[in-house]
Image 1: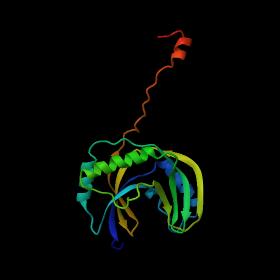
Image 2: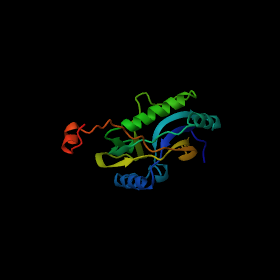
Image 3: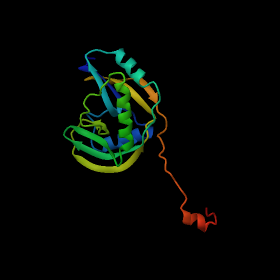
Image 4: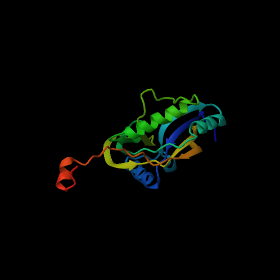
Length: 195
């Protein structure tokens, strides 16, 4: 194996088995074969935190320190399949409030250890790359809900196609919204329970 172009460290979600099988079927449908991302490497990158010419255990220690307390997961949907001369990806559809909130919380935690995401000047655009084979497609597949169950720190050997999970954090269930429900007075009166 040749020396990697660099070692890239990034935080990501990996799909569960059912979602990974669906992504595999989409990759097949749009002709991702020669330059396909291996199914076990499908992931949604939240942020790249370092690109170095050597492996760096310090990065792993700093991220572990920043993420010492549990994070709550987020709920979002993927389903917009897009292809171009650079390859194919499945993008988030619908409301992205929860994943954007998760991302902001993650970035704030990393900032406590002076870790700043690279390449995110325009914000988070959630997607899963399926492959780098050129294709032309723009369609909405049936959306799939994704509730990640863990956050991963991955070390990638850029140019060699090697990914190593350096750390993982189980995620708490997504936070539930709360509403101030009050029984309408007319409904109380109709039930004979007037105030």
